[in-house]
Length: 435
Ligand code: ATP
Ligand code: MG
Image (cartoon, rainbow, N blue to C red):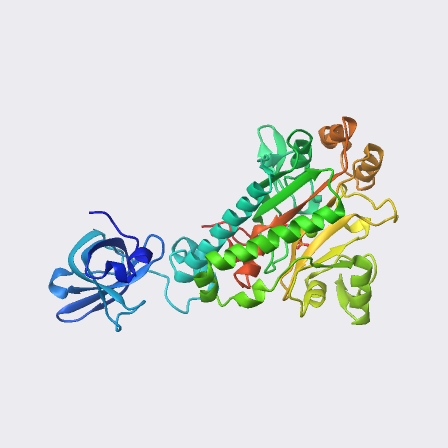
């Protein structure tokens, strides 16, 4: 007889039928004659099983077992009013009687035991939302004829600046863990057209925030002959598609996570576009201060936008908002300068509403070899390690651009989670390399 997924059998069609489920003991109540075992299966389905106590050996939480019985409907049954009246139990393994994950544990303990915390309902729910996000974005790229590629994670040179590089010993040489696949995607557009990738990016982030991981999943896209207008609209379409599909496919999970689905579904394209100048003026008019070393001073033109500024700019918004036209000097060496405005970069940062902050950075790339060389030089980077990248401008350079989205930032917003460590199964931060 085949096994049933619990999610599948909590359905009147199965009433009175013989059912076989397997999983782990989630809750347990043993009375003199009857035992109530709430079982959690391999996809997080939960159902109550009732058996004569004489047939139930000494069980512990998280013991693995298999139960065969008949499905009944009973209002009193915990977890949705269905119960299996079991006639047979097979034990796979009796768990140690000290399962460390209980209610009201500290966040740190839950992180220390993440390999076991992943069995909790919250983590299973988040994992499902995350998996669906990955599936939906992949579908969007397939439907829109972008080609999926992969890029190496061991690299020779920095993309996003030296301060967050992770060095690794590479035979007799030194290499780094990739901060972004962008330079490789740029190489691929000449033969594959619009390309996208999803893979880990590594940033040695030294400050502890609720939005930064040392390893995160990075979705990146790059295309030839693209414009700023295209870059805005591609990201708008992708996000709206994601929200619509996710809220349809994962309604129950989002509700469990207390995500306001209605508010989420109000997002529509186009999103507002705010110039960096407008953003700074707005922040200055609200007298926003930023920290500079020990000093607190008023924000001014030329400053990067920190999370507090992002919160103010996105307050009371339904849609995400783009901030474009940053000063060149706060952006990496490869960004293209606006030919019509000296010192201004052709970039698009996308900020999520409700203070969730930056989810994507993108823009046009410098396609002129001389300008690119002078940027590499003025940033004090080693020209030799970018020689292959410069070839892309030597042989048939074209206007091009793209963007990168942090998947955990998306999960954080869509699943309404405070801490980015909850948005990934095994988080990596400065303080955490295990489990
Ligand atoms: P931030 O300003 O938020 O630190 P960034 O501008 O340094 O991010 P980018 O280099 O623009 O990051 O990376 C592209 C996207 O990758 C970001 O918009 C964000 O969604 C995500 N991202 C960047 N750094 C991290 C990180 N340390 N942990 C998780 N996601 C990140
Ligand atoms: Mg950025």
